[in-house]
Amino acid sequence: MKPDTFAESKRIFSVLNLKNNVIPENVKKIHLIAVCGTAMGALAAMLKDMGYQVSGSDLKVYPPMSEFLARKNIHINDGFNGENITGDTDLVVVGNAVRKDNPEVTITGERKLAFCSMPQAINHFIAKDKKLLVVTGTHGKTTTSSLLAWILFHAGLDPSYVIGGMLKNFNSNYRLGNGEYIIIEGDEYDTAFFDKGPKFLHYPPFAAVLTGIEFDHADIFKDISGIREAFKAFIKKIPPSSLVLAHDTDSNIRQISSNSRHPFVYYGKNPLSDWYLGHVGLNGSRTEFHLYKDRKIFGKFQTPLMGEHNLLNALPVIAICHHIGIDYHAISSGLESFKGIKRRQEIRGIKNGVTVMDDFAHHPTAVRETIRAVKPFYSHGRVIAVFEPRTNTSMRNVFQDIYPLSFDGADLICVRKPPLLEKIPENERFSSEQLVQKLKNQGKSAWYFDDTEPIIQFLVKTVKSGDLILIMSNGGFDNIHQRLLDAL
Image 1 (cartoon, one colour):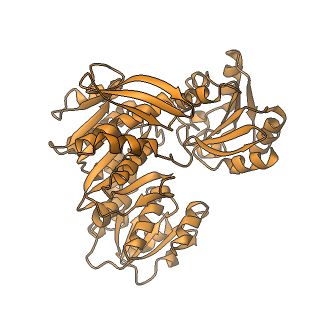
Image 2: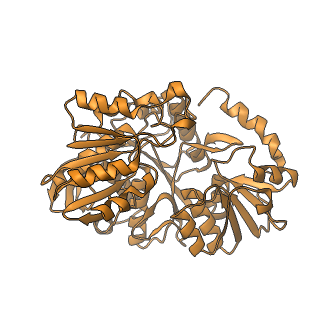
Image 3: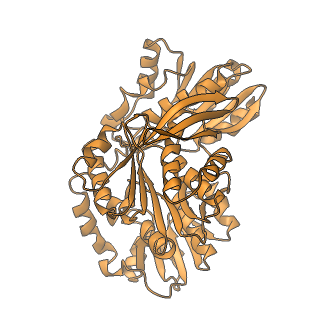
C-alpha cells in the first residue's frame, strides 16, 4: 500500500471519534452511507430481512441496485445530507467510497453516533456464528464465490453468502441461510476512509481461496509489492487449521507463500499440484473436463461456463466441497446446473442472428481470457470486442502497453474514450487512441470512439448474422447493450 496509508487511517479516525467505532447492543435503526454499491446494497437487504429498520443514501441513486432496494422497502435518499440520518439512528455503516468530509460523516461525528465499516457489520450481524469460506484474488472472485454458494445450496447445506454479483440461480447477490457456512467474496480494496486496510483482513476463513495476484487498484496501491503485502497480511491472519487453496502457476502467490508456515493446497494445470485440470473438450454449449487429485482421476465434469479460466475457478470450489464432505454426484450436478452470474458472459439478447454479450472484464488479463473463452463457442462468426476503460486502474496509463496484447482473439475491436478521465491526473491518463493505433499497427481491425452512440451506429452498419458483440466494462456503459439490441 502507499506508505502513509495506515498512518492516515489512525489520524482520520478523529473525525468520527475512535471510541464510537463499536457496534452497540440493542441496535434497531441502521443507516448506510453509499448504499448503492453491490456489497453495501446486499448488506442493507440482509439487515432488513433480519428485522432491522434500514435506511440509506447515495450520490446519483441508480438501477439496478436502487430498484433492488426499493423492492425491499428500503428508503434511499438521493444525495448526501446530514438530515438523512434521523434522530433514532443507532448505527451508521460507512461505505468505502465515502470521504471523510461527507456531510453524513460530519453529523455522525457531531452526534457521536456509533459507526462501523461494511465488513465490521457483516461480521457482527451475519457471519459471527458461521464458518467463513473466503474467496480472494485479482480475478475470478465473483464466479468462484457464486459457484461455491450454489453447489453448497444444491447439496442441501443452506449457506449464506455475500457476493459482488447477482447469481442467476437465486437472482440475488446475497442469501441468509440457516447452515453453518457463509461464502464471502474477499476484496483487497480498502475498507473505509478510517480503515485503509483491505476488506478481506476482517474475515478469518475456515477455508480460503487465492485465485491469483496481479497489479490492480492503482488508486490505492503504488505497485505490485503493495498488493503482495496486503495478501501477506491476509495469510498471517488465517487460522492454522484452515484450508488454503492457491493457484499453482501464480508467481506472486508463490512469493508470498514461500515464508508462510501455513500449508497451501495448490490447484491448476500442473500435474504435480494437489488438484489439477486434465482433458478439456466442448460438448455443444457445455465444457467437459477431467479433474485429478493427487495424480489420480477424481472425476469427469460438465459445466455451462466458458473458458479455461472458469474451469480454473471451478477447481478450488470442487476441492472445498470435497473437503467439507459433499459427495461427487452432488458436486457434479451442482456444477452442471449453475446458471452463471449477471454481467459475466451474460447474453443480453440475440437480434437478426447477432448475439450481444455483457461482461465485467476490465483488467488486461480478464479482457484477454474472456475473449479467449468465448471464441470457440462463436467460431461460425466474428468476435467483436467493445471495450470501455472505466475503473480507477484502466483509466490510468499503467497498462497502456499491456492492453494491446489482450485483444488477439478478437476479429474487430471498438474502444471508447474513458468516460470519467477528468478524475485522473493528466500525466497518468490512459489513451484509448493510442491503444487503437497500436492494435492497428499489429494488423488488427480496431476503431476509436469518443462516445457511445457512434459505437452503436458503427456496429449496426458493420455486424453480420453469426457475429458475437462482446461488450466489456465494469460500468453501465450508457446502457449500450439494450440500445444496441433496439437498434439491431
